[in-house]
Image (cartoon, rainbow, N blue to C red; front, side):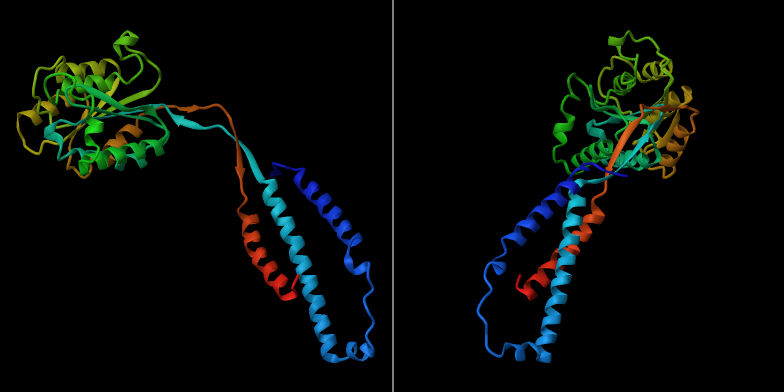
Length: 331
């Protein structure tokens, strides 16, 4: 514990002493004696007068004590009573990309998928997360980050836009840059490229950065158009770069699309869940967090914690107390 402005109490004490001396020296009551009043000694001996004088003296003492306390508390609040400690943050070396299909067939499901993503968030601690929206082309909403407040804000903002239709075009901008829709293979490959070394600009060669990699893919696998890369090829690409696949299927029909989706994911030792599976969220979180990874120690950080609340509460109590006493004493 320490004072950020340690010199402030000394400065205030000196100022109070100087002001007190000036007031004492220049007090008008000491320059003029006033006029004598006949038989005033009888008045000053009256019990009522004596009681009033005692009350006035007591009030003056109380007002002085409260004023001194108020000055002291205000000084301490202004000097900033702070606590300092050194912390070494620890983070899990896991990376997770949330990979969401925003094609027309997913309009009724995107908000639900984003709700599922938000449900997963409290289960993670220190993992880096990213969100990629895709249709015929992909757009990263935010890169890999461990700022969970930011992640929650972004997921909530996108969820609300998809649910209400307000600003949904803003988030869909850039997801239809070529013919076709719901190009699942291209979308998955784009999500895998968010990891280090997977992007063609980085050579496309597998990189072992010591981090666990996961993609949580949400789609109905209803492809409309010609894909640059098929879903099986994209799944192979993910496996090549050490990415684990977790599939959420928005297709409620037991058809060929669902069968292909499930087959491809499970062939790569991934995990497949129906979107309406109540156990999906907990199961995915448990599987990702059970992956044996090491904690990464960040650089030591000096934390300075400002705790003015106690002094401010005292100020809140003392200010009205002094004002009441000052009014009664007509100071």
